[in-house]
Length: 114
Image (cartoon, rainbow, N blue to C red; front, side, top):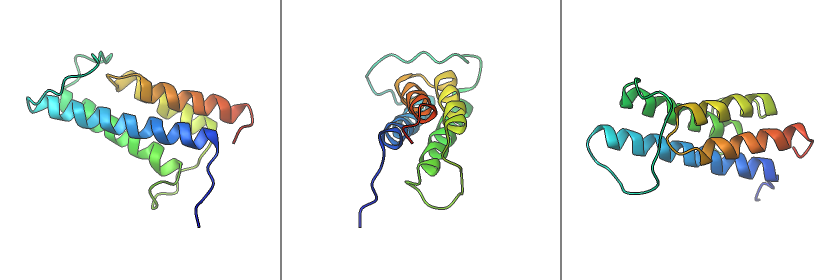
């Protein structure tokens, strides 16, 4: 039986997937493999790319654990947690879309669209 998801869970799910993809692309860029696409900036240019990539992948996976896409860890699904992860996705990410979607999901959660 399929589990019904709210709009906030769908936005957080899409944002988490984009953050994980951003982390994988950053990690591939560290190994010299560049995939053409939108330019990414990232705020911590002094941070080594592989550390930045690992942080992004962990943040994206934490969002996916929070939405219960991946079973295992018991991470709460609430607006504060999504807001923290969304801000981390924007700070460490090169593509800001994933973090922005997670922050929008957090704002909608605060407005009662759980």
